[in-house]
Image (tube, rainbow, N blue to C red; front, side, top):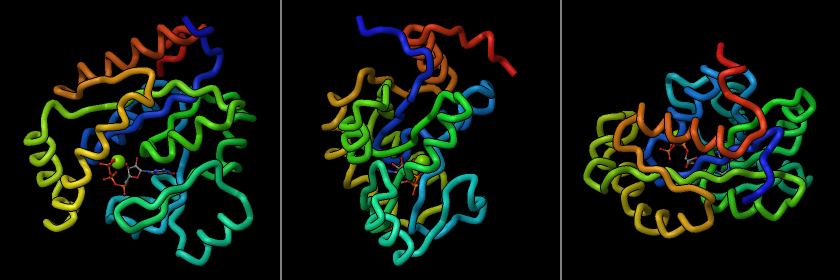
Length: 198
Ligand SMILES: Nc1nc2c(ncn2[C@@H]2O[C@H](COP(=O)(O)OP(=O)(O)OP(=O)(O)O)[C@@H](O)[C@H]2O)c(=O)[nH]1
Ligand SMILES: [Mg+2]
């Protein structure tokens, strides 16, 4: 058994549409000692997204400059856009002793894991099956049909990476999935989540 974390860096990854963004937001809402790492992306903001909250939205030139300046722990190209975790945003959260939530893909997780000073707890979330995923992606109704198709195509490749993670959780029901993740945090940290309830 690994030593328990005093401060946890919880990585949530999943095939597109399995629910990791919803879950990480829910953790942050319920437990004020958890903060989501806000990534940089070249993707265009969706109507409901706020710059600096959901992502730092930047253009390709700015992103490249940050890469060349070695400002990222990790970055990846996903569905034609770049996404990355900046060292500065993590440092700011670490200085305030926050537990950090990462909503990043498997490529980013592999890169983060190479930094031995980052003490990660890695959880892979799976949808109950591919049909259900398709439903969720279409229902979300924020992406064009071809984008949904492209995301589904990646599903089989994405799920191959489950073994890079400490835990795999199936999101058949949001409440159950959330409870399982709370349990994973409880089991692997020296603190109790209840002490931090909002
Ligand atoms: N490597 C890496 N991946 C990231 C980062 N930020 C976000 N991602 C991943 O990029 C993918 C696409 O994210 P979005 O464009 O926000 O789309 P989404 O609808 O949230 O996608 P899903 O959460 O996968 O359903 C998701 O798998 C995110 O987890 C990052 O900084 N680094
Ligand atoms: Mg998401």
